[in-house]
Image (tube, rainbow, N blue to C red; front, side, top):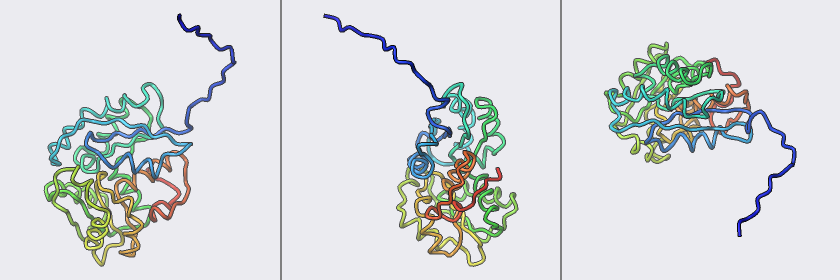
Amino acid sequence: MPVRIERSNVPLTFDERPLEKRIGLIILATDHTTEPDFRRMVASERIGVYVSRVPYANPVTPENLKRMQPALTQAAQLILPDEALDAVMYSCTSASVVIGDEEIARAIRAAKPGAPVVTPPLAAVHGLKALGIRRISVLTPYTEETSAPMAEYFAGHGFAIESFTCLGLDDDREMARISPGALVEAAHRATAPAAEALFISCTGLRSAGVAAEIETAIGRPVVTSNLATAWACLRLCGDATARPELGRLMTIAGYPG
């Protein structure tokens, strides 16, 4: 016998949005780290984080990184189609450098016009400058070939690079497996005496989770890719809460991007 289904006559009310703020993440198909980091540092009852992935195949080389560019517009379109976002973050530091921040913003805004676009290297630049930093050390997990454009990028943004260290890896899944303890040790060794801060590149590294620990070890601010983008996205959503347990950057209230 068929089940009788009744339509409720309870009057319904609707909120403008399920959550007040919306952040879109565009991440690599191979990314293990960005979603957990944003779940820990950004997502809340007020801020929703919505993810789209783009095709990507290792190894991490400038040529492979550039191949993601044509997929960015479609990836942005798939995040809550026809709905506005308060920020869109493309979560690849090295690709942002070789493709270019402006090109990435243009591709994303083709799908999400008016949305602020965040890239890891530019968020790191804003973060370092907000901390008053001019002289930096840089640590990357990449090969020398993939690291070279990163050095040019930060020098081009006016930073004096006191030292630049790479770990020589070319698979982002392997980068994600580096233990937090090993990252702390590598960061300590990579920091030059004359550097005012350390930047740790790569959204695949689990370095944001130990940024505060590294700061204690080296006695200077630490900015990582995911820490910088989380800071930028929170500030763009109007959340200026100081969270020093995540690192000194998270005590800076404003985002100049």
